[in-house]
Image (tube, rainbow, N blue to C red; front, side):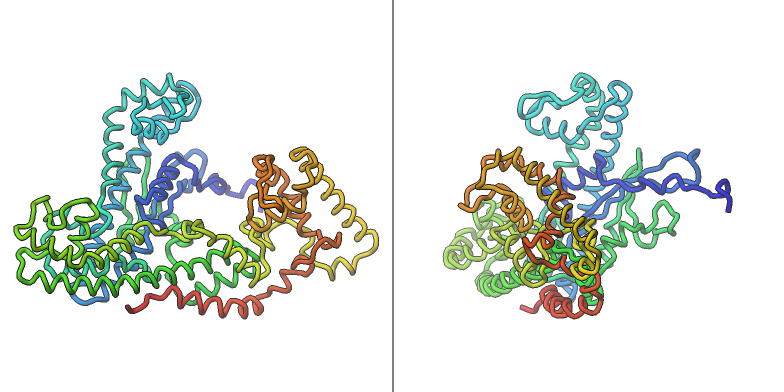
Length: 559
């Protein structure tokens, strides 16, 4: 084939971006808890046949919450009234996703307009989110909290005046997201939806059932989780029946396949653990073990809560038989949480038998307080494994667990995984000993030179202070401790510079750790050929008990 006959695709490189203004705003919504904790977004450039075709880009939004998914299943499997509640939950979820997508579509248009304005006048970039935050804090859009002005402030001011209508719409949509009901019972009241007492009881029963393990993805919730945004267009919901082929602009992309297609099942869990072991990825193993432990912890709390809640609810309902209209335990709890009279009805009207309801609240005060405290704990609980690992000593405990069980150090994550980082030590000690004297001497000389370079770089930071030598800094780095931590437990004054030291010298640090056995300084798994040692059979054998434990942790339990 001649060179001239090769047809190049101009979009083979740079088709996907996760650093656009809209994707960053999407991620901020997720961190604020305004969209599902497993949601994800990216910008995708549609393939073109030639450079003459226009560039078409779209933001691909995928909204998902494993908690909502598990809650839906709990309702769906709890009889006719549970199924009605599950249908309402899917409606509420779809409404919130649409609201978020509409907000992001308008945010995207406004961000593009700002960039176009600055591109014409200043050739620069503007941060729309920062401008909106400034206004929300009661400041001028161009005035930061520290009193400084944003870049291109003079060019932004006329743009802000000209776009007031669009800016107001974006601000209102954001406030709508913030005030959107958190629970189905609140959504019922907000929408004034009439429903049976049995449905209300089912909604209350399953208020926190989303904490009970992980389930396969609900088809009902998948109907509204995909949205695409194209410049100048409204957010478009992509339902499964509308998905096109691989070359369609609405295709089921690799992004969907990687992040949203896998249900929780044995085969996938087994393969993911095996892959993590074969790569030597401590982060993946840590995340897997922490996921199981987090689920166990939540299920234990949920079991205790379910017992006490059902007891108090049954007692309250028994006492309510002579009271009209009846009030549920959750209505009383919601009133107390909002600082209202426990006998307050929706619409802030006091119940005609308010005194009786107050007497009931006082009678069961201790139990109601216990339920209220547990509900608040659920509300404040981490929604992702990452958040859970930040609590207390969870992260360090699981770092140590992965090291003790699998010999993988905390720094061995991502591109620093055992098989992904670039290090010539992977063939191990056997290979090293089989080589000639010249090769072995060369490797040892390079190891000494590398250590000298690192010590020289560190000397410039610490001034040669012996309380923080290279071995101490690297030990801290390898085991996820504060880089400036000294043996006496204090933090060195130069610790603020050590992050840059590690980042600037990452290649030398990785090779120094991997080759330190050549200098007789330590023994570790890089002395062997990890690729050969951790083959498929060994990984499968090690993974088997981990997978069994993890799957049991992820399964929903009967309370």
